[in-house]
Image (tube, rainbow, N blue to C red; front, side, top):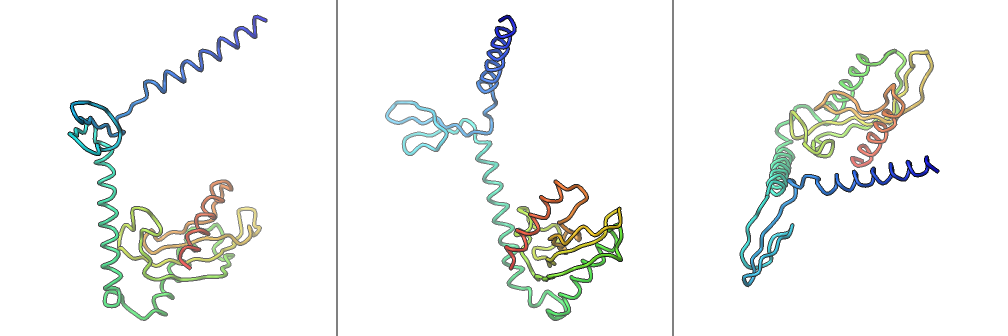
Amino acid sequence: MLKAARRMKSNALAVMVAVGGLAFAPVALADMFKCTVGGKVQYQQTPCSSGEEKALDDSNRRMLQREREAKERLAKQEAEALATRGTATTGNEGERKARAEQAMRSYFEQTLIDPSSVQFRNLQVFLDVPGSKLRTSGSKTTPLVDVVCGEMNSKNRMGGYVGFKPFYWDSDEKKAVGPLDNRELGAIMEDLARRTCASLS
């Protein structure tokens, strides 16, 4: 009986702490507007539909505005790059795809445990992919990047093949997203590679 009472007291205290935490949670990221309509004042998190408006905290609005401006700049850069790609690239399409695939193979030769055992299948090379399709912030080097998608298989530390896994390599990061030694994280990366490549096809 005493133990049950203690448990009830402990649970009640936990609920109070949780509720208290919610009550005093910071709200600095939320916009708050003071609206005066017909002499009546009210506070709300959306802009005033009419009357006098005063933003009490617009930190979130400024953050969202910066994000929108960054996306607009990125979209403009990628559009301009797509419009001029015919004059900005060197070599024909076949040569460029071959260079991208060779760069991908060189990457795996330098990173795999047993590079000589690597096998590839279902390779596809996509040229001039907008960086925003790979990362929300776009590419680090050029607005458009080349991407190699496919499946790979290689031997692990025990000398056995792990099976074919999806991956993609891009010319911006110059590294691949796909299989990892860590199974749980590897599964996440493989799913990301699968979905990314499907969006490019």
